[in-house]
Amino acid sequence: MPVSADVPEIEYKEIKMKKKKSTIMPISLVTVADQNAVISEQYRTIRSNIQFSAVDHELNTVVVTSSGPGEGKSTTAANLAVVFANSGKKVLLVDADLRKPSVALTFQLPNVMGLSNLLGNKDKESQVSEYITKSNVENLWLMTSGPKPPNPSEMLASKRMEELTEQLKEVYDLIIFDMPPVATVTDAQILAAKTDGTLLVIRERKTKKQELMKAKELLNIAKANILGVVYNGAQSNHELNYYYYQ
Image 1: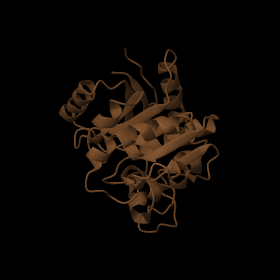
Image 2: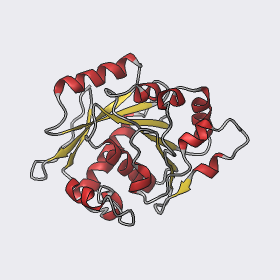
Image 3: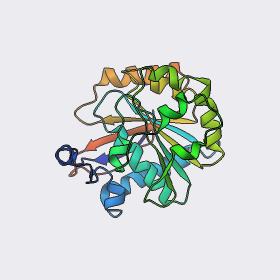
């Protein structure tokens, strides 16, 4: 399995301290706070690796997931959305983690209308644009999760979700779906089977080998196109390299 890049440790304790203050942007969005930081450069490296992996086929939709909780998949999804937008692509970040959403908090948005509303709305005449917000980052748009539904897996597996994805592909160059951990619930498997590529995030000193192997197996069962692995939370004093294995 290819490894896209090592991402240094981010001070997650500070995020937890500020989480209650919705007016303060979590520092996990480092690609906005400091574009010259080492971590920002590592996200640009991941962007380049993804682009190289898609030379022979079009890459419009990407799922970002992990084997378990707390491994940094939402941080990775948000920062990748920013660096792809910085490259000139028209990007939509969709919070498809309908169980533990984070996009609204990260970008300081209300989470009243989002993906769950759109999937649950049987009125196909409703404008999708009403559920999308332009971010402060040029070329980046956001769709929050919306209220937590009782049936996330069924919603994501619905025909309406397929139709919505096709509709969004006509507007955006790249759609990034922030998904729940693949080994915990079936949500990521469902969407990974229907998108162009999947990125798996693991975390140093947290991800266990058996959990990673289970996540890879589940994605293979779904016939997902695994683009690579992001090694998250690397110690800042480590040599920062990226590896690519065939």
